[in-house]
Image (cartoon, rainbow, N blue to C red; front, side, top):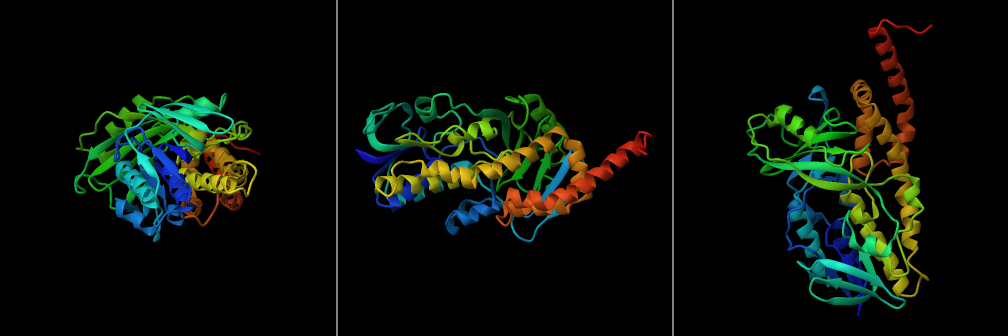
Length: 394
């Protein structure tokens, strides 16, 4: 019997398995597909990822982002830039294989192409059934994504808010697009309640749309409109988009649902730990995987009575951030054109937001600093709107 079984060897699972093995536990990692495997994902890592991973992960970074072009439905474009990196672009097959390789180096047994079909929690163990055989462990980590088998089996009633995204990979040689090196495009006007993006990689552009508010489970028409009209894609052959679910943090209701049982934990997308503003999940997957591993080690070494230290840490360090981010996301995606014009008027707000991506600000500190500036700019926008319609306020 293993100390821990990790189901899913993406960023969350690989991070958990690595930390567990480094602590001297016997670990089995189970991955449903053959590594490396393609995964539909924009592949954007916020630069604060540098604080979580060893520097050699940059060997799989395909583009370093210093500039962001913001636009609304292809128009009203403006750019911000930073001398320090704001984000890194990766292809998930290479990035996830790197993390899985790090886990293997630490000592876990990793079996890929072995899909989990059933999980059962007993008084003294957990049992995990795959398409090949049964395994037993003291603890199981559910790192198996938005459609988590572990969550469905052991966390009855835990259903997060899953929204949709579509993405395509466009072959690109760097000279066939008007997109400058180190630049990404974010467009707030191409899908209701969300945004479109163009992310450069070594030999391709990742292009997609995501609905982050409302009921956009499959925003296909928005994707087609975006790829048809976006100038950076002119002359390029854009494939039909592939869909993938985004299990967003969905407010305080989900906080009342535990992420642990007596012998199981949920991490990453399986725990709905996805930023409500940009839909970023990789950073929080790695972070939660490390948090979960620390909780397991403490429990199995007899330092804590159960696994709830993980719940406590998520509630302390992640949920307060997500609560602020959710308020910001509601404003952003309910009034996208007004917000776009506000940040165009006050680009320092976006420069300050970029400090979150670099790990120098939190959502909470950003919100406190930005409120006064945003309120002032919002007031000017209302005055402009009144003048444009011939209305004035006494």
